[in-house]
Image (cartoon, rainbow, N blue to C red; front, side):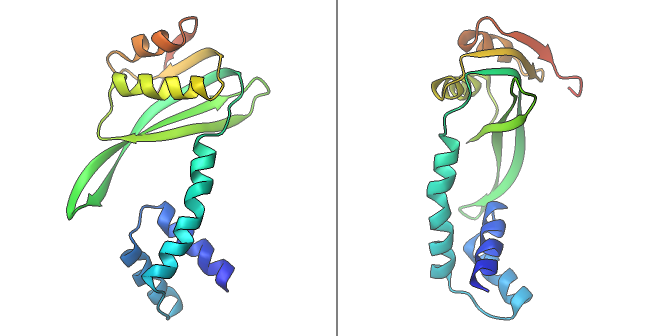
Amino acid sequence: MLDELEHQIIALYSKGMTTRDIQEILSEMYGFDVSPSLISKITDRILPRIEEWLNRPLKDKYFLIWIDCLFYKIREEGQVKSKAVYVAIGLDLEGYKEILGFWTNGSESSRFWVKVLNDLKARGIRDVFIFSIDGLKGLKKAIESVFPQVDIQRCVVH
């Protein structure tokens, strides 16, 4: 039962729910109370694994990397705020897709994309054949400043 409970807590936590939200849902679902300290202990155990995954070494070459920014709303200090999540997905030379990472910021900017791209490079990426991007102003120059030989293609969805 504890393993199932841990999985439920981790799933709810990964969706951005607060300790109080998790407590309420578990009480409704299972009919028993879970202490905030137990929820915190469980979520604190996964944070190092998440950090390790976010900083893992990457392959040196990718055929294609898609980059885009998603926006979501969070409740922070009693206010609802919008946050930007930068996402990079790579297609390796064997044809496998991989989430390379995600980063958060208050808004989307080409300046922050440079930080993201430098992080990808620091984690081992040396060559990318194609970047697929949206129409963010300055994004093409940001990519070329980190990966000068890459081809850049506008995503057909954008």
